[in-house]
Length: 219
Ligand code: 0O2
Image (tube, rainbow, N blue to C red; front, side):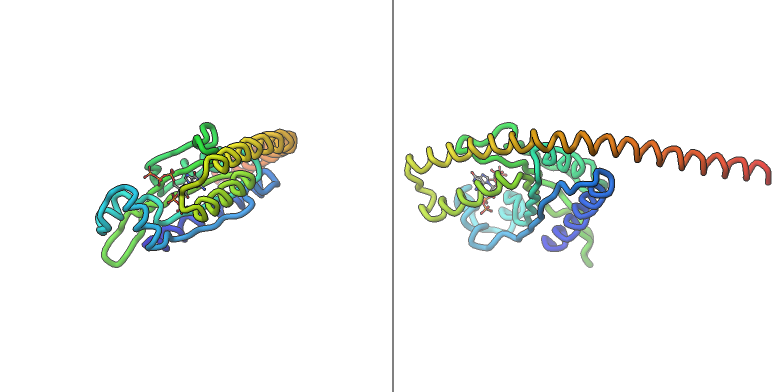
């Protein structure tokens, strides 16, 4: 059921990306990846929460058994994509965590959505939880390396390394802001193109609808 939920969401995200490419003539999503959490990782997370490894505890308390990660070009893309996902038909938003506006004390930055997707099985329809992480390439670079370092030190990272990681996080935040500033100019030009396309479509549809109406009236 988790695989089915991921497939459904991946198709929807693909559609968002195609729509964006057509309308805005640029691709806000660099890449998308998905994974099902390993048994070991589920078991560790339950232990951390002080819970027994029961099926009920897993389903109720672990929100990220199925996970999708969307890597964007610029910071504003994160919020645009989150907005589009939040407005999608057929999925329910259960939780939002904005670590982009408010990074975690260790420097971690990303936008998280916990959503519920209805999956139709032979026994009926089940609502399946999926965690969607949306972040820029710089945020992803930091998080991947921090995850590796955490793993290496078995979560007992020395103070000096923690400080170094926080400093690196600040550098990635600065880099993201500068790159987003460059991206804004690009987007402003694109917004003008979108306005022109929308006006053109409206004119075409209005003309066609008027012609149809007068044709019907003369019948
Ligand atoms: P893994 O191995 O990546 O799967 P919750 O029950 O929702 O309140 P949870 O699930 O800890 O608590 O929520 P949170 O903080 O949003 O974290 C969910 C996931 O975000 C983590 O899953 C990580 O993938 C990522 N994440 C959160 N904080 C950090 C961080 O400080 N560094 C890095 N590198 N990733 C982070 P897991 O299961 O912890 O890890």
